[in-house]
Image (tube, rainbow, N blue to C red; front, top):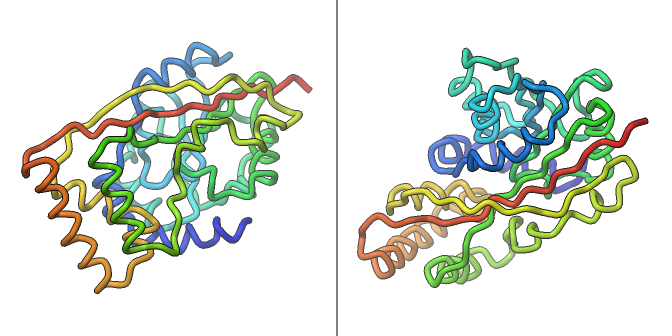
Length: 260
């Protein structure tokens, strides 16, 4: 596993509450796009690095049978409490993408949402290819913020308070990860983007910021308090303390496993 991946497990556990409360989900159109390609319906799927179950929830709503795999016990507990008992729920297991506890050729779909950048790409892709059936699909997904004057101001504020910690999800995620684009086991489709939005307010946005690895996961308490103070001031200035639309692009990189 990559050093970044080991660090992510340590960082995100304490953030699980804010992650579950404030992270966005994924648009129905993205799952519809995948369903049009799947050879078997309903699919047997794995949500790898499932976090608190945002993508798992979308898969279940579309009718998949899903196992959630996640290295952080705290994050996985949130996914279980949220989704256990839902139709299609196959359970949740602590596991890393580089060593999936699944048998060969057992899945129609593997989804990795907002997480592939933490993986050892070579090992993780080898595991995804191993557990997929020939003709099965791998979906790498990122929610990417639609730039606005407000989000650019937030970015500048983050740089001021957390200069040593880069933002892991950037515009670069709109391009197919090179490790996937060059992988001999997969036929890779061009990236496709799905615009979506959610209603946002000050309290939810502060909780959202607290779930970011480079803010809630990186700032010492005194520095976080300063960041939160300035963030609330920025929200008041830009949004006049009224709710607003938080717009983003869900970017999908879909790849079909070639026949053996």
